[in-house]
Length: 342
Picture (cartoon, rainbow, N blue to C red):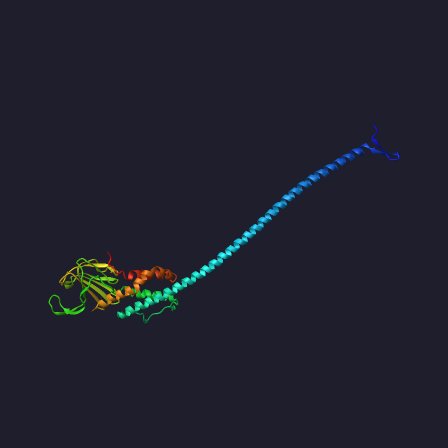
């Protein structure tokens, strides 16, 4: 068999043309053509797949860009909201500070008025406020006084309240005065004599209250005075309560204004049930009526207002000095209980 193939091509003029091809070359050509065709098909498939994947990736990128834009806008919205809140907070803080300052200033003014009222009462009663004077052979570093008006007023109020707390003000019981202070006709022998206190009407067993804070220096039977209680209040003041049915305290006890110290009776040199109440300053008996009336005046002028507005005032005072405020507030509350304990 021949390894060549004859291909005869006949033209229009019937002229024949013969092409001689080798069988091997023909097979190689066919194989090459088939290979190229397959490569073209594979390339087309790969290209199509890559195009589809590329389109998907582009779509994902577009979606992510959209989300990024949305996130960016949301972040801007949050940032704007934060700015608004910060501005609102700043505005509210400024308003609060202004209101607090106004309230503090109002409270300080009222504290100053109250201090002046207390100092006028002390002055009218003739009470001398002790002041510190330098003594020899002393020293130490110099510390300038506080420039804080708030602290100065609180310290001043604290000092004044301490004086008032230890000043015998008010009544030991509610009864009327049956025999005043001073010279009188003695109820037993009928002769003229000096009455060193006031006698107050009361029922047997009625409670008797201390008129100021202090320390009991005597609680015993004292001859003509009968069952007797004497209290030292400092600053030269002492009070005594005589003709008691019984006493409820003992020597050395610390007492508060309004605390029950005994019960009304008629022991000792007495013509009937009553309380003999004495007030002494530096050992000398003085008329307690002024002190009793001063307490009533102070109650109407200041204490009622303190009680009515204590909550509002203490809010402002809290911004000044919590430690001083708490101490002073406790003293204001305890200053005038105005009733005998049950």
